[in-house]
Image 1 (cartoon, rainbow, N blue to C red):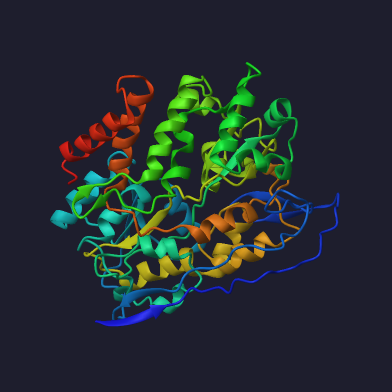
Image 2: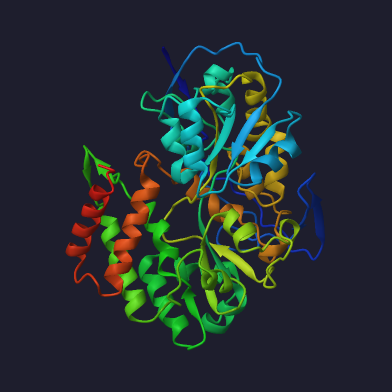
Length: 465
């Protein structure tokens, strides 16, 4: 094995650009196969101001990954079998690649069991499969997946990718085994009408200070609740990932469950939000939580672009029943940098169509035309130059975000994310942590110390350590 540095280093520089003139003109950007998105000439900056942003953090640390010899590949089978957990990968292949596949769609609840079975037996095993961030690392750290070098993909092809997406895709020998077409930095999507009614402001540059720190957010939540008609967040759990992303320690260190000090802050924040009645006491993905996205009673939802586009149904071009409040939302930075979700493509160890699988990965995750098309339609893609350019584009904006350009808000978070603390069991551990936090805020557990002990015991009882 030889070691080769993959460098994704973008120079940090102050880019002083002129203030963009306001304009009432709009320009429409049409994306092939992805519906239409209106690009509004009046663009909001990182703080929401109507100007081209002066400085966007672009520094991606120099990273070193172990690169194998680049294989010369060919297909050994006429059929390319792909497994996924939703229609997204299927649609991307049909839109951006000429490779014909047999797509086997599993549910999010069953795909791990299905994959574990077929990868153990080899019977009807896929050539390629796609996994959500909650469990993708489990497969990339196993011998069930191939290094991308075995598909003929060189690390030099990945120089524009956000470093955290590559950190996430390595095995224990620091070999890259999966690729993602999207990055998922998080921001705070806020309802402009609710902001005006409760805070007296609605533009991003005016709303941003209300979320600039955890103390500011807590005071904002109290101010919003004073109206008696609105809350700042529907669920306590909406803020969890913004704190989770601030950890410097993994959940498991040297074989023991470890609780980063920042997670104690979440216990306190969650308890305050609950005890003072500052949320609607919903839980993420419950019907009531989803209903709050469109009923005009909640100020904010926290997450990446996919949450706003699809879960909140703000983008009319990709939702059969768009949110009636589409266009009445904006985005500001969260108090902490974080990411949520993402999908990684991997080749299984049974792959008989290495050339085709490599082509699909290149077509979707590397090809700049494909990625630019996705970005034009509100996807935060895994390409530093595309996103930086779009973030500085005074003509770009999303009609379903009130004409705002969301990219400047998210760029800094994307470059600051560190995935070195993520374990293969983070999804399951996060579930255990949320369950204990819920017991604590409901009063079933009396103190933070007792809650932490209960969390450690739950992780151990689950067999994770």
